[in-house]
Length: 408
Image (cartoon, rainbow, N blue to C red; front, side, top):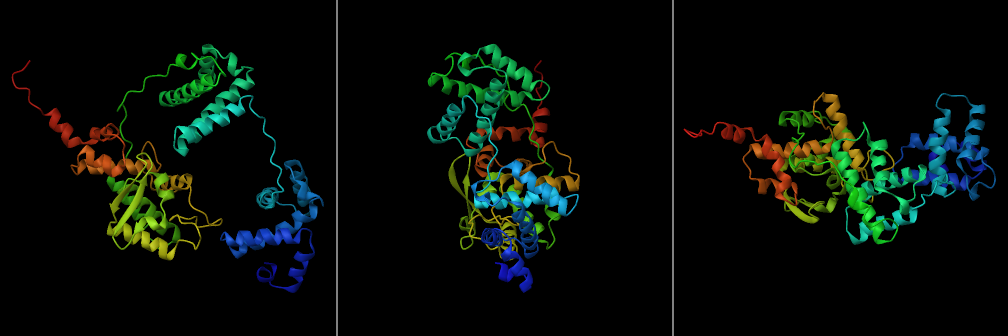
């Protein structure tokens, strides 16, 4: 790697004579394989020389955060700079993790960590919960167990008053009614599992009372379709980011895809010959086939042919910058949120799910039935689709204009 990256014999010799040359070169090759630009590799290579000189000879046995802070101070003593410490940390930690030399700071183990781990396995393997549900409920239960530990409350001694206190202390003034209901549901399921394992009172879960959340009480938070058009118009350039974002925005707004469905979309799911796209709907947990509209096909083909980085990953949407790996759901959220903010579109929620709502609202306006809309969006139940009837202004006006005649 040094031979191709560095331009002079003196530079190559300097890099090879510095400590941990083989480890530094192997890491630079790894970064190049992930798509790092040559300028980025040069910065990493120069900084890694300094870092390697300040590391102890026994660094392969593990480097912790205190040792790395010492390296940062030594590096700063040689070259002062406002961003020096951040740059050293940003380059050193990934290198040490790649070598498996990084010693992760020890985190205090929860007293009920073993139970939490088994509960996560139970949710995933026995109940078949989606990965997002498992992650969210693990977070909520872990936060509750951490609070219990820091307030000297043991799981097997918990009382209903302790759970009430948790909601008062943690949620007062911060959690909405919907959030409180979700936390209550997560704790109720966990405590039933814990009771089945003999770790807490069997009646504890039944004492949790969540606030009532009325079905269909809210309105869909969709932007106007003209605003969706503005979003798409903002991508009508030849820049790589706009080309990629245009394809993403079309999938979200035309097919009503969830962000998890967008990031998991693979190249082999786009059938160019038969002009269709195969989706795996997350909630239905079954495949679904859609016609590949010409505008979407054009946007996808332009992205794949001209912008998508060469990579072994099968997913369609890949990061534009190194590391060249698939986009995450958070990345899709950032794509939509940034463009909504830039255009000044005023909606309650500015993430990708708003475009899914815009898709449904448009289908309602075009006169499609709830069954057809639910099938298009991949809903499991027609009740999920009913919220969109509240934005069918034409039908609502017909109800409002209904003449009761002479009836009192």
